[in-house]
Length: 305
Length: 244
Image (cartoon, rainbow over all chains, first blue to last red; front, top):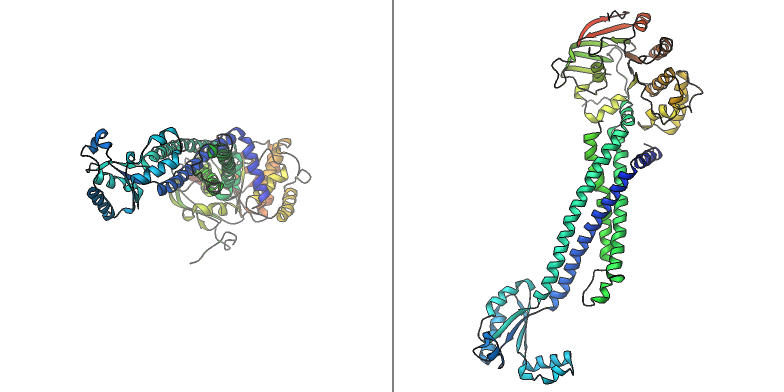
């Protein structure tokens, strides 16, 4: 089988269906860009989770003198030394607890001063107004509920706060965007596949004379089908390349320039170029294989061999 | 397990074509297209297949090319039982056959030489082989010097010669012609028949379906007549004999 002969046949086929080929390229590119974007978004969420969950604690705030009047949970007055001891030993008995740090009111006051310095509000705050707390680090941050149910409502406990909750909203939003991207990708993929099937059908019809003659002179079905499959593969690969460019450009304008999220959200760990680059081969392979497969299936129906 | 390849020629005496009680019916048609046809065609024979439209000639040829399978009975071509030939081996079988049609079936955007070369390209012949065999076969069919003409520039007779050159370039054992003179005037037809006779004399078996009474009567070859799917006449050195 001669490469030059095969390549010229593919060129003729692609030019004959220029508009269809273009439509295939665009739809494959969009669906793959969305796919790649969704994969990267998933990685972004995981990276942020790993980074932040390591740093967040479950905090059990204890009642101080002032809380006895203001907070319902502290109606029995400030926490006693005995209660504190009981809470600490109970915490340490839990399997899921990794470390427990007791933050005294003095320490809390010190941290507060460090954060807010000599601002007006910091100057009126006194150590006994600060809340004592237990900072609990969990082995598995997802197990927050266990601690919450065990300790909220106990006498001497003001409230149990999971710092994860603040992040969870963000993560949920990102996951939602992810699902939306995947749904749109699915639809685009469907469109791409239908376009490919239709392109193959038109292509097979317009070349039925050639394929009929090929059949008569004993060309193998592989040989007859290959130009069609190569056409689809070529268009798909082009779409994949466009998708790759979109992903690279997308990361650049979202994170580094344009929206420059990296600058505006310095606390967020954004995925690096290596993560983007590692997705590209997958995008290219899918861009190559999926249209080829669709074409092969369509040929079984539309091209008699 | 014995494996036979098509490049090995059938043993002397084995028929090139053998039909054993072959019937063919198409779905959604009450009448079968072929009914209980049995015959043998030997190597080197020239056979006319005659019969009115709808008599089963086309079905007969389609069975030979394995475009259709027999409903019952067995078809052997070049020693192979076509019913037991797997799909992927069919192209290989077809390389042993040459086919010529009434409508020539040339590629209009390729030159004469490219059309003939196409038959060799698709079966993976080397460029050197193609460069050698194409001018040779074009000379044989009387088209020397017209290698670079387009099919549209040629007369009907010349186009059919290109088609015959393409069918013959791979030196098939069997040439199947479906009304090759159907679109040609009587004088041109005679030229085509002479060419087919010449090819037949190289040892290639020729099976030709035709409606051309003059040709059949002149050639005095074996005549097989079908009528409503039945074999009604098989005559050595026969005449057309069919009444319109």
